[in-house]
View (cartoon, helix red, strand yellow):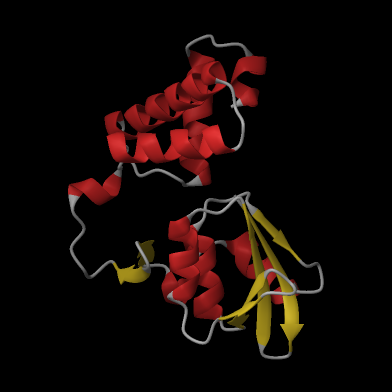
Length: 179
């Protein structure tokens, strides 16, 4: 999924979701002050650091297109999580502080429901059965890697570690980069 962020007015941003699912809409609807703009096919959200941070935390890296004029948001994205929010993560439709308990299930979740959800999205996008099987296999192996190493998913450094481990197992560079 791609998230496109542009300036709407001096107090609001316009956010377009491309390739979204129902949970993505539920997340956007949970943002206070949001409004659907049907002509633009975008959501108007408040231009506040905590709102933008929740978008960055909710969706994996590499899926954002940010208007170049939004330098403050671009900097926030490049820096990752800001110091004031460093102990927060998004779970479901809300921000959770590290002070709240975190169950083992939230660490890495790749159950049959998540697999089915990913498979359904890939079917709707028109991928072949073979491609779907390959993608599900890659995700399954990545989740297993994170569980074996006691890490969480989604961090760019951890993804890089995973890719380097594949190269260490003598997978070809072309195979690893296509992931």
